[in-house]
Length: 452
Ligand SMILES: C[S@@+](CC[C@H](N)C(=O)[O-])C[C@H]1O[C@@H](n2cnc3c(N)ncnc32)[C@H](O)[C@@H]1O
Image (cartoon, rainbow, N blue to C red; front, side):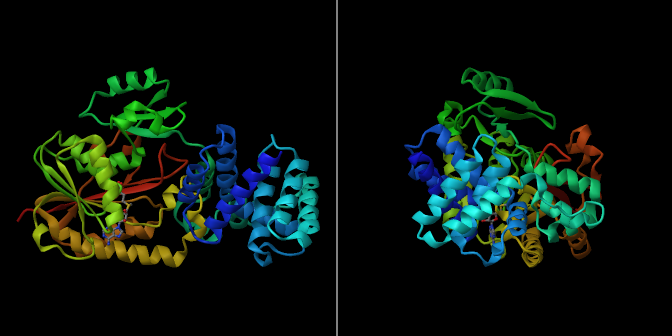
């Protein structure tokens, strides 16, 4: 039992780092699991599940707490608020943990953290919630769809409104459900290292379950392994973890032997490595990013695969690089964005991103596009992509770009896609939606510099 208390204290620490101190959830979770390597598999899984689940369901959890507590969540001390949140997650979503244990452990933890005087409060709120879990009053779906969707799927109201106006209620609900579903790991076979068939056989020998992905033959869904670092095939660089949506960028870029490619925002290097692979040892990919740290991440990936036709460079994409003027057959602009298409993977992002944040990112994207279009040679291509489902960062930016860049024309990406995706191409571009497509939310457009 003492061990469980320790786990809950670790959970509290991680959640505070994320919600109070602004640390990214994947980093906070990775740090704690690395620091406490002696924890067994079950404890590690418990910590990960409670942290991620609490973040995933935090809007609903706060709504429940507010219904039964006189002190509202936003008035509580961060430690108490966080203890209550993770306890309510366990009460509502983890059948395997008895309610009494959840309440007792939360009370003990409050005392251990110096809140002896609030033990009664924590106990009272949690026991009332445990008793009334079936009696919670939610907003009515028909009368107040925005609140209902927001609370039911724990998505901020401003995001629900944004998507309702663009995609309609039925699609939005599919998307929100999609964010909460578990997704298998998707990998890309490094074709230069082996065929997809050879990789599948190798992975199966290592005990991994491998399934085909419907959108691309060399993409696979894998499961049933402990951790990636434990697989020799991964350490050898036989494959790359990459969502299918990201793989489509290189497919749509369609590099030809000997092409010069500049990827202006490349870290950690997924799309650059993919293009280097498709170039089959020829040409060159300049994989750039802003900081030394990010460039280091690209270098690690280059090292792992051993590819020779790619180099990492530290360059600010908003600053014009004279040496790159009109030299690229392909420029990849996979730009910093609000990330609203990957909320399933980045559980804390929905609380950190704001409407204003999306607006300034849309501006930054325009600023970068204005600079990097100059690197595309005559007849060359510029591929623009984001991992968001915010129209202002996607189709609206495409329209803006075409209006302001008469030397470019839109290129229809339909021929580069499988039949299932071709029907979703709009104005030559593809908007993938989580829960609707078998992928993250993602956007891809392609422009070509006209020949004179
Ligand atoms: C969407 S991520 C790129 C993901 C990458 N293309 C891949 O497939 O692995 C956007 C990247 O833009 C970088 N970035 C942000 N501002 C930048 C700038 N001014 N110049 C260059 N890179 C920038 C970020 O560091 C981040 O790595």
